[in-house]
Every structure is written in structure tokens, then in C-alpha cells.
Image 1 (tube, one colour):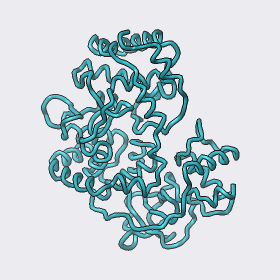
Image 2 (spheres, helix red, strand yellow):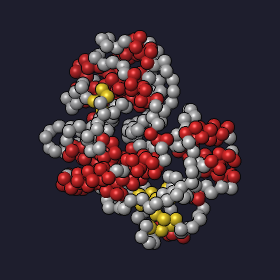
Image 3 (cartoon, one colour):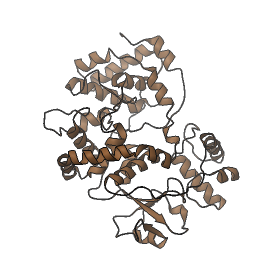
Image 4 (cartoon, helix red, strand yellow):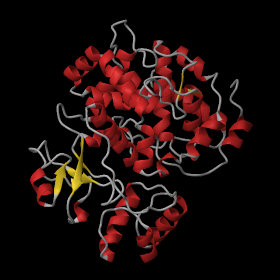
Length: 404
């Protein structure tokens, strides 16, 4: 099998561990049964070839697959994702930089016609597309240097998430067959390709030729990137002409347990509880909204609308999703965040201690205590705050840790 070394594979895949979920999956793909993984490499690889043939992969794609090799650096990245241990303020201040704001504005102007066409055809506003474009690759400047084929082969053999990556590997081979990308294609460690880091299934099934040259080039063509990203967001369920996120002020105590992303209420209700816009009373309803407090009741506060769920579909991390949505509001003309003084949060070690205590109380902490402040931890924190009579704003503090 050429470069596929059984000894190398055994060394690479003996490690175990857990990491944060893939930065961006393709939720439009049907859930797949967990395929065979690990074990002896040769029978696994033969099974992969048979599956690829059955899926319609041609000679070109199969020949490239035979040249693939495992990459231990991919697993190292997969096991060591610590970026989302940062707080929202830390992460957003780094990611929504002056440079990205200026470049975003410049690209919105430079490609104004394409953004207008994207909104007309798919209903997605230009600043939303530009925000993902800037966060993912600095508008195409940093697209990743991992060999995409090797990355997806490695992650398909690994037993942590083969059901996610094996379909992406098959889709990549089909892209080879079609000549859309070649075997030297590089991108992110998890197999995403192009200027908005889309997975091969998205590239294959939703790629749009935005510049009319007869091909879809997500690595080099900005119009292709803009139109394809707009189509993907549309297919995820984006609601045309509707808002996604709005920074607000909190003027008094409110029933904090209602500050839940899935608890959407009309503006009139939030106004009754003392929520105002940044320049005065909330405007007319733009659809029901939920109160989003990424760092608790004393930190930044937002109303999030149904379109915010699309940011979460793009990336399951609330920190990333909120940062991307906030970035899009800035590109759409909103001002910077209002200064706040959030309560002191927890260190990664304290977060692991908290998760251990929450698990002991019967809360689901996922497959492993990882110190990442994700949705499961946030929900459990809120429940324990309510039980203890603390403000249930879902923000873990040393006080809560001490009371547990």
C-alpha cells in the first residue's frame, strides 16, 4: 500500500484522549453509523477502498488514495485544542481585531456586487459572510498547510470520530475525480478547505461558481468563496433579512434562569425585565430573542435571534459562535462592546474540578472531564445555581465551586 505503514499506524493510534468537537462539521449530512476503525491497517484500508468504489469514486480518486499516508501531527492537533478554554472577552478581543475589521470593510466594498448577489439569491447578509471569511482564514491569507488527503485518512482511521471524517474522505476523492481539487490540496488539520474552511461534502455538493469561469475554486476565487458560503448558510436555515445578534444593557436584576439560548421571548418581555438597547429602549420585535450572557450577568449581554443558531451550527462552541456573530454586527455598523466587569471565572484546572463535582452530582459531562466550558457544563452550572439559590446566569465562579 505504498506509503501506508502498518507500524507507523500502530504507533500513531495507540494514544487515547479527548478534545473539543470539530471546529466545523457539516450538519446537513445525515448521521452515519460508526464505521470500522483502528486495528490492523491493511484490512481497514481494503474496506475503505471497497466503500469508495461502492460510493462511485473513480480510478483517479482511488489512485490518489493509494498514495496517502498517516500524519501524526493531525492527531496531535486533534488532542490538544485549547483555544476555547478562553473567555469570550479574551477570545473576541483577539479575533475581532482592527486589522480584520478594516480588511472586512475593504472586502465588502471590493466585492459589493458579489455580496449583493449572494444576499439576493440566498438571503445572507454580506457582513455575516465576511465575518466567517475573516475569522477562518484572514480573508484567504492563512488557509492551513496540512495535506487534506492525509488528514482525512488519519482521522478516518482514528476511532474517536470516524463517522464524521470517513464521508469527508470519500467526498474528497470525488473532488479529485472531478478535477475540482488535486491531490496536493492543503487546508486545516481537520480536512476543511478554502477561504472559509468548508468540508469536502460542502465543497462537492454546494460549491457555487461565483465568477463564472466554469469551476468552483474555494482556495483562490473570492466570488466562489462568497457565493458558496452564502449557499451553505442558507441551507443551514438562515432567515432572510432577519437579525442575528444585538448587544444590550441590563438595568436591573431579572430572573436569570430565563437567560437561556433556547428561551426566546418578545422584546416586550425583555423590556419588562429591564433589558434595553445600547442607545435606549428596545426597538420593535425582530422576532423573538433570547438573552445571551457568555460571561454571566455582569459581563457582555446580547439578544440572540433565530439566525444565531446558524452560527452555532457552523461551530458548536458558544464562544466562537458569539464572537463570529459579534464580528458580523461590527462589520454591519455596530460599535465595540460596552465595558463590563464580569465576575472572576475559573482556571482550566478549576473548571476540571467543577466538572468532576458536577459529574458526581449526576450531571452529564460528556465522555471526559476536559476543562472546556461547553454547553453541558453551562447547563449543569445553571441547574446547580438554581438549587443553591444563586443567580442562575450559567457563569461558573469560585463561589459556586466552593459551594459544591
